[in-house]
Amino acid sequence: MAESTRSDARRNRDTLLAMAAEAFTRNDGPVSLEGIARAAGVGIGTLYRHFPSREALVEAVYRAELAEVSAAAQAMIDEHPPVEALRHWMNRYAEFVAAKKGMAESLRMILATGTIEPSDSRVSIVTAMETLLRAGAADGSLRHDLEADDVVTSLLGILLTSSSTLQAQRLIDLLIDGVTTRR
Image (cartoon, rainbow, N blue to C red; front, side):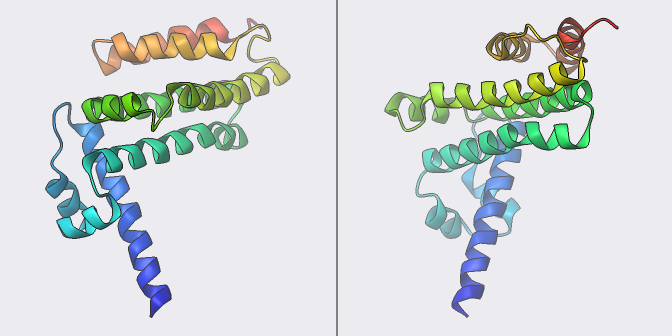
């Protein structure tokens, strides 16, 4: 019974994280914790047992999403040619950035406390980009003289300043065009 309880608790936690990430992505304003619990099919008490505060939930979502988006680089290389993998990963990273808009205030508070170090997040994303760029340089589809940090900075600029998803996609296309080799 104890193993079943643990797996139920783990499943509830994972579902809460998924519903919270979805809610934060969908909304630019405050997100209701009660709504997240309801969407996860649990009571608010279960949410608070796993995440004692809004900030604890935001931090957990952020860390889970960061780990997933970082790991996605290698998974995409394993499934696609490097340029295609880069495009897929950039789209996944765009989703990650979009999710942060709905939790911006709580995330700012967490960053202010030092619980999450912006430099750690940056290193994780730049490392993922390095993985993608190395694969493309190795097969000759991506330029070999690229700095991963430069590409990440360009991508962030696109994602944070675009007025629409369509504009962001057009600008990502331009960025990809700029990092590919001419054959």
